[in-house]
Image (cartoon, rainbow, N blue to C red; front, side, top):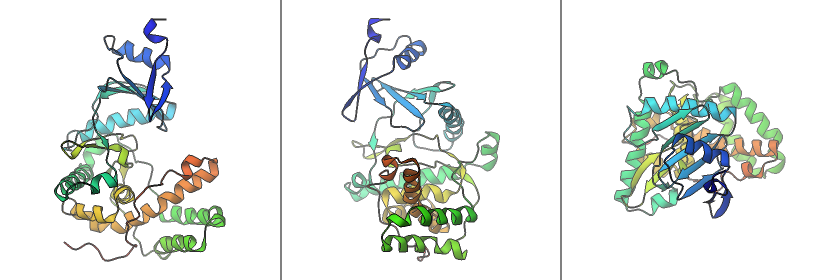
Amino acid sequence: MPEWFRLFVAIHDGVTMNIPCKYLEKIRAVYPNISFEHLDFNQDGMVNDIVVVNHQIVFRFAKDDRGKKVLSHEAKVLKVIQNYIDLRVPQFEHLEEGFVSYRFIRGEPLSRNTLLKLSMASQNSIICQLGRFHQQLHSIPSEVLLNAGLSFSGVERSREDWLKFYDRVQETLFPYLWSHQQTFIHELFAPIITGELNLSYTPVLIHGDLATYHILFDPFSETISGLIDFGTAGLGDPACDFAVLLSNYGESIVQRMQSNYPLLTSFINRSRFLMGTVELQWSLAGIKYKDPEMLLAHIGLARDVEPIGKNRYSN
C-alpha cells in the first residue's frame, strides 16, 4: 500500500475521523493527479458519505442501494434545473453508480439568526434570491420534467393518509404529551377532518428538503452562493418547499417572498399544516426506531407561523 494511503484523517465538527481507504483509492483512480493536502469527511448524511478534497472537489459515496438510486436521480434533476435557475447548484463532473464528484461551492449554512443579523437591504436581497429560486424551480414546464423522466418526490399524501397519521399520533405520542400539546395537534388536524383545507395541487418540481445547511451563504458578499443536495427533489406540492422554509425561517420572512412568488398565498395554509406535522413525523420515527437523533432533529427551528385559515397576505 502506498505511504500516502496508510493513514488519512479528517476533521468534521471538531472530531478527527478516519476516512476509509477505499474512498481514497476511488478518488485517486478517477483523479490520478490529485493531491490530498486537506480532507474533510462527513458521514452525517442518511444515504451518502462525503469527502471534500482541498476545499475544491466534493466526492459523494452511496452508503447502500438507496444511496445509489438517490445519486442517479439527483443527476437527472440537476441536468434539468441548470437551464432554468439563476443560483449555482452542483454540476456533476464524474458520475457512476454510487459515486459522483463536483466542484466545491463555498459558503456556510444560512440560519435564521444569520439572516436576521444582516442589514435590511441584505436580508431583502437574500429573501429575493430564495423567492426567485422557488418561482423558477416550480415554473419548469411539465413536458420538460416528463421528458427527463423525473419521478414524484415521495412526500405526497392524501387526506386519508393524513387521517391515518393523525390516528397514529394520538395512539403513539399522546401518552407522552401534555394537554396543551394535544390541543395543538387537534387544532392542526381539524381542517383536515372537516375537509376545510384543500389538499389538491398541480405537481411541480420541488426541492423537498431545502434546510438551512443546503442553502450556502457567502458572508463577504452577503448573498446566497449556492444550493446543494437535490436528492429528495421530484414532482410534488409546491407547499412542501414553503413548509420547509416556514420551519427554518418563520412566516415573517417567508411572507416577504411574495413579491417574487405571487402564488404563495394560494397554498400558504397547506404549507402551515405540513410544517406543523414535521416534528410529529420525526417524533413517531424516533419512538419507532428508538433513535434519539430523530427525536431531537428539529431543535432550533423557527416557531413564527400563523394559524391555518388566517387571512392571506396583503399585496
